[in-house]
Image (cartoon, rainbow, N blue to C red; front, side):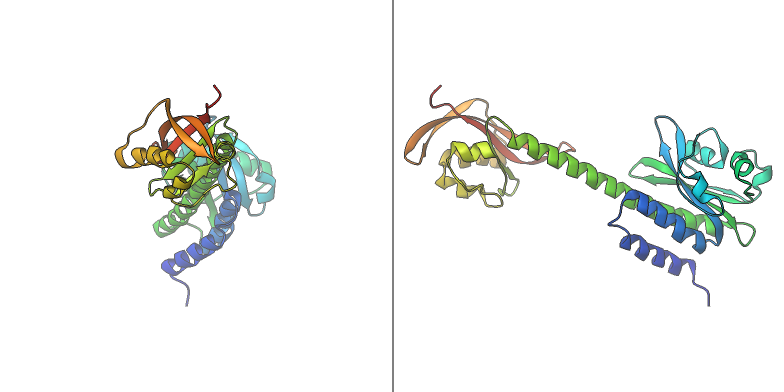
Length: 286
């Protein structure tokens, strides 16, 4: 007994999940290679979109001439895929030769004969990522059920690719932020909203003459270094009270130091407050 579309969708989801550790390119390749046989297609391609240049580029392609097409680009003004890119609408074309949106440039250059097409927009997070096309089903024509199934697996893949892009962006921002904080000329100590220390840069260790960075510990642990540090971070966390260019005295290994500091809210990439921090310098000899 043949599989139902629901069973195929479940199988596709499992396979996509298994591929999730790969790159975005690998996920598009999985959609192309796994989706085509599920739809009984002779060929399939994913076109990556460049929304600035308004172009589509063959990112992955299978079929009689698929390998020859990878890397080829064209504008949104060309073909069924171009129309899909312009409108962000799924298209079902069962008579490509007589459809005004179809262009035979690829067929002419490769000798391939396009008969029917499913063209699906890959959308996720409000972003247009590209167009997925399934071409020439063995049954001779695509059904509306084929269209819905193709759109479902395209959307699943697009969301997974979008998540990977977000994760990569956040990782880059975190690395950039950590590098900036670690190279500050002054000390910086920060905590999350629960009071767990998430930043303790090298200059902070130098000023307080400690080998411990206190990362992962609660801010109350800083009492052994300097009670005023805890008060400064606590005022931000509990009262949303920040200060600019204040001072406090602190005993460090028997030496009294004068610390100049400012306290701040730490914000995430979306602008929401995710913690509190203190920026400071040793101004004892200034």
